[in-house]
Image 1 (cartoon, rainbow, N blue to C red):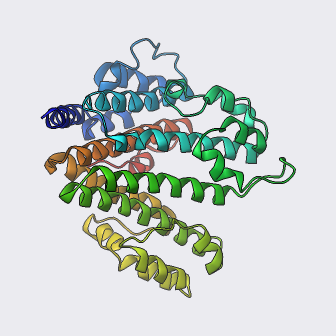
Image 2 (image 1 turned 90 degrees about the horizontal axis):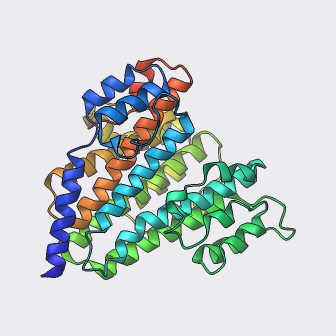
Length: 351
């Protein structure tokens, strides 16, 4: 009975927050703005972002500060949702925090690769500090890969990354290999929790959602590596997420494609290609990742409207939040680089 009441409370709260999402009218207004302060003022006065922006001066806010506040708002909404899981026992809902931890680790590895690890301190997501399994403040002092391993001591991440550590602690590691290993851990976490905590239709739908994302990640990797880097089959396979998913045969066909034209034809005939046609979206090899995101958005939007399975709705709501934040960041960056509003609009995903 407690679990049922808890699930109902989470479902109701998620749908209520979804009802306050940005809609096309909001995006039309935002696309008319000519500066970051104008965007901030609209969000503060007209949208659900008013709470997170309440203590800020919209006239003087800068791009980085606004983007950080948008991400913080996403995490705050997530915390509000899982607060309703007062019956406990749903380790599955930690998936978003695990994903956030991995994103921070990869961010640091990229900064190390660029020779700019000191920049992490300026972008430290302080709202995560009390929730992560390692200290973000400690990670901000990292200057070498071996120091990153020390910062991750007593976490699974340390063991995952240790095998990529260079002997001298200074030589840069293989970023792609690190990312593949960490994302494999993330998806194994999801599949394991789904298997342990859910049954029947709920388990099947959650697995389907995660499998779609695995297939999408692999598809994008194969497409880019073959089309833009002309990578060999062995290297491509080493970069893939190692899961048996419905899209595995498609991925194999893509790996074996003998030309760019054959590769494109394989994708156009796939489920993703049919989705593009149904959405009257032109297939563009430069933006294949955008197309996979549109597919995920379309599916999660339908779940928000029709699903009665609480974890499916929670994952779908957070997917919609990810897309909304990315849309806003695209608008902010577009304004920063003086892009035409029409070009910015084409980057947005609006259901």
